[in-house]
Each structure stands twice: as C-alpha cells, then as structure tokens.
Length: 395
Figure 1 (cartoon, rainbow, N blue to C red):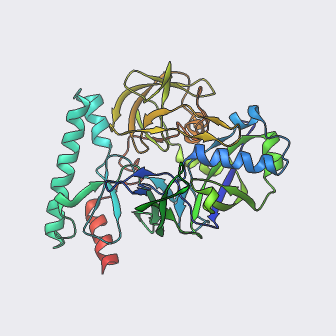
Figure 2 (cartoon, rainbow, N blue to C red):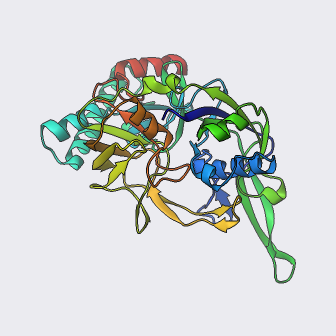
Figure 3 (cartoon, rainbow, N blue to C red):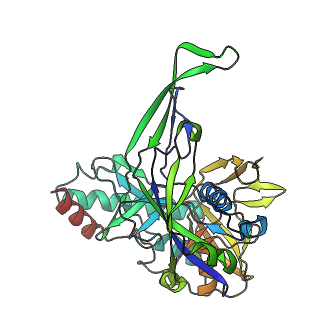
C-alpha cells in the first residue's frame, strides 16, 4: 500500500446519461433501476480518454493496476464517498409513505452476537432481528402518533440504493431523470416500424457523481494535475448521450483510515460494488470462499446475507473486445467473515475498501468493514431519535 496513491473523482454530466438499463414490464422502455455509474464502466471510459490525451503511462499493465470505485450521485462535490455518501445494505429499510426516503438499519450487532455466541443458524438470526426491529418501529410510531408515516407494511429494503448523509440522517439520493423516445428502425428495410416506439430513461445533464481512483505512482503523477477530462460513458453515445467532465484531486489515504475500526474476531463487511470469485468462470461469492487481499490477508466467508445477484456484460472501448459475462452478488450484500491467515490492520481495511483483491478486476469486489459495537453500522440509529428527527424535518 505504500506506493498506492488515491485520487478523488468528481464527474459532472454535460449531456443526458444512460447508465445501465434493463427492459421494463412494458417492453418498450429501458429503465435504470439504480443511478450509480459502475466502476468498471467508468474505468474503461477514463482509460480511453487518457489514452486519447496521449498519457504515456496508460497501458494494459497500468490499467489493470488502477482500481476505480463506482461513482455515486451527490448533491455536492465537496462530499466524500464512504463518509457522506454510501450504498444501503440489505438490512436497511425506508418507508414509502414519506416523500424524502430516509433510511435506517435494523442493526447488525445482534445478528453477529446470536450467530457467534448463541450458535443460531444465520437465517434464524436474521429473521429474529428483522421481526424485533419492525415490532419496535411499530410501537415507537404509535407512541409518537406517526404510524401512518411509518407503516411497517410499507417498509421496503433499500439494498443497493445510493444514500447521502443529510445532517444526522441518511436518505436515498435522487437525481433528475427523463425519457428519450424514438422510433424502432428496421435495419433490413432502412425505415421505421409503423407505430413502434422505444425509450431510454436517462439522467439529466448537470448531475454530479463522485468516487475514488487508486493507482500507482506512474499514472498518478501524470493524472493528478488534470482538472477537466472529457469522457464518454454509458449507452447512446452516437446520439449525443454520455458526455461528461471529470475532475480529479489529490487525496491522502490517511483521510479514510477512520473508516477502518476492525478488531479481532468475526466481523461483517458490506459490498460496495458487485462481488464475485473465479471458479473456472466468475460466480457470486458463497459460504466457504476465501478472499485474499494484495497484502496477503485471507478472509473466509462464514455467512452471506442477501440473495440478490446480477450479471454484468459489456464491450471494452479500450481494447475493442467483448467482456466476459460476470454473475455477481449485488451491491449491499452483507458477508460474515473470519480471518484465516494474515493480520487485520488499516492497510488491509483500505485494500478491502478500494478493491485491492487478488484476481479482481477494476470496479468489482469492494467491501466496507463493519465492527461489533452498536455504532458500527453507519445506518444504525436509535428509533426514538430517528422518528423525532424525521418528524421535525417532515414538519
């Protein structure tokens, strides 16, 4: 880690941006369920832009040694990923009754204690924790007369959604979106299908995203002074979509070390990006897998909380080749881990945060460690304090 340098990345869209799409139930509209720019997509776009600028250190070797976090939407580029901006995990919830989607965790301490000290199976630990949390939430909501705002039946998992800290509360980050409508073209005839349309959901120009780049000295020295880098990212670039301006700034790794309060024993980590391991072909991480950082720390997975998976596939603009399809755990999945070999220290924590994992590729396998105490989960909050704070803001 001594020769790893860290850069803060701020991206501002200068044209509508189509991040990642899936077909909606209607069949003619392609929607973006999460407004997060995948790290692997931004990594490829940035390497292509730097190559076009004539940056000499951009080559295949350095590209694979450069790790890019996903870029998360933000209301202010002065905010920092992991501190003020994060991704919600599978056991965090928000109420659909409020216009502003405030997020709270059901707490992870009891799950870990029941799993370790009482020997309960993981499913029992999870169900007990969620049931107790929902029961307490209902009681507190009735106590403060806001049961219509915090209806337990309307609580929904926030897994994988981008969140931003506003004062003491976390809320789901919203971005302005629009829909691009166009005719479907029959390429064989060179004309449109009569009465057939399709549409893409896009993020409007002027939207802001932020994240980090971890790179080695050579690339760092050439990139750190670049203030405005024009990149093309996402779908529809031939129609004028996906233009953005990137600004990089130097950042000391020591500024993130307070996010690494790991101690001995079992602990929980949250996936910040899609996670996978290679078993002939890439597959999601499961119980029994071992994750090894570049410094040699080996962590064994004892439990996985969250069953959502996703498949990433795409085209490399840097090498003009198709990318292998990767099936992975969705962001926000929680993993219970134990140390199999090595020492858990600040260096290892930073490697987990930035995705410095053996066999990893840029944009994947990034984990945020979580400790035992009740304050370990950034989304955890006393329910009395949470409801009072929300009611004051709801006004």
